Image (cartoon, rainbow, N blue to C red):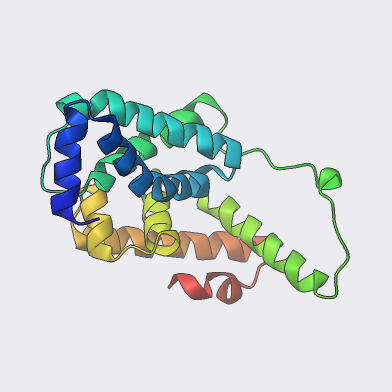
Length: 192
């Protein structure tokens, strides 16, 4: 959706047009869900928090003022705040499933699949040790695929600050993964 269309829908939604709000919701719900899910690693919780983001958007629309940034930037800020609030209510690290309760099917490529799953779990765990800003940069850059300038716009920082945050986050991830015994180049190959 281009900026002009988004502004038009925003005005209509601010005036109570439910269809305009629904259009904005449909346009952004998947991006917000992916962002939240990659921060909490729990589908049900991510769905709940995503719903909360759009509830807060609806409540905040009457006072929302366009500052020249896409609506998605505001939604990411709301989503980030919801994730932070969630982790304040519960312990910092997400609960891990009991290994005994995970069903394992036997397939010819089982070792490869299990290794990928274990590497993904190690990477998600390592990300939880990053600062909130570093986590947000990693998710926006490497999971959502945003360019440096777009991340800077969403986070309200300068591109050089985003580059520095990304560099520190990748170094922290690399050292944490090395301590767990994983082949860092295999796990982080796509992140640099």
